[in-house]
Length: 336
Ligand code: NAD
Ligand code: UD1
Image 1 (cartoon, rainbow, N blue to C red):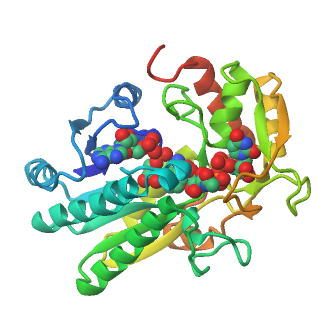
Image 2 (tube, rainbow, N blue to C red; image 1 turned 90 degrees about the horizontal axis):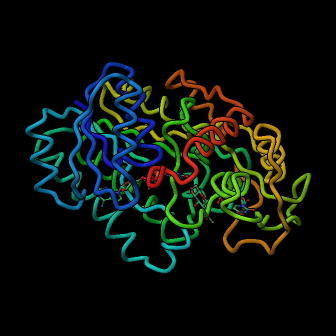
């Protein structure tokens, strides 16, 4: 039985699908602070298999311990957390409490139950400003905001944990920019309020929920002047979790980039989205967003060699699947 924290969320719902499709048993723990249980109902109807769900907070060590003990959990994939950079600047202690203290409570519950296999959702944001590209796992770390620092501190904590007890099997996954949706269009990203990230905003412009995209800066040192990111299809990202879980049969600590290795600019994304949706995406050029870097993309070689995992889906497919989800669910899970 695999415990998936944050499994009702955007990435979690796709990881749930991947695990169920691979025949694994899954229990999701989520406090639903940024998600909707409807995602899991859809996952189950798509897979034709059921999973267990408990609405609980990862900071509740006793509740998590009882779930691990009573459900026969053998491994934990830990996605639960807060993830908005701007919000983390405004409420840093909330981020430390949920992300760092929450992970500490979760690990304590795992120790109590003698479960020592953990996959953790980290982020490319731990690298901060790139000093060389592509970013491999040896690149120095220097997160530039509280959200990124919570991921950095958790990574450090996990290294200390492994050093103290090398029976642990730990996979730290540094996600680049997850986008897209399951090809059914039934599960996808459902941001609360105005989206911060590019793809959900572009999709809402195309559907008419937002009037115009602001392109934050066209004077970067890139071919078209706009920022470049490594967008990765969320279904490819989800399959990476399965691969790492299969790899963690032996004790060890692995830190891996999950990205495609290819960067796309903001304008390239807009054009790809317009082409697949057949809708215009009006935009205007605005000032650079504070904290943004010009270019960020992964060297995914280590994940490829270690896990025999590779991302397969193109930018066009990412946009097409994101668009299908947006069209079928113009208001997300809440108001269909
Ligand atoms: P999400 O907000 O959709 O999912 C997170 C889930 O955790 C939500 O369902 C939320 O309700 C739940 N949650 C939050 N606090 C909780 C708590 N205290 N107890 C129990 N559940 C709680 O976000 P996502 O995009 O699916 O991200 C999943 C993970 O991946 C996060 O840890 C995030 O930091 C990391 N990550 C995401 C991205 C991205 O671009 N989406 C990039 C890099 C890393
Ligand atoms: C953001 C977070 C990062 C997090 C990542 C994935 C910031 C500063 N960084 O990164 O920590 O790990 O999301 O969740 O928030 N863009 C626009 N207009 C928009 C939105 C975005 O032009 O309305 C541009 C940005 O300037 C950037 C690119 O699109 O060049 C991608 O932005 P975004 O989707 O927010 O991802 P990141 O900046 O990579």
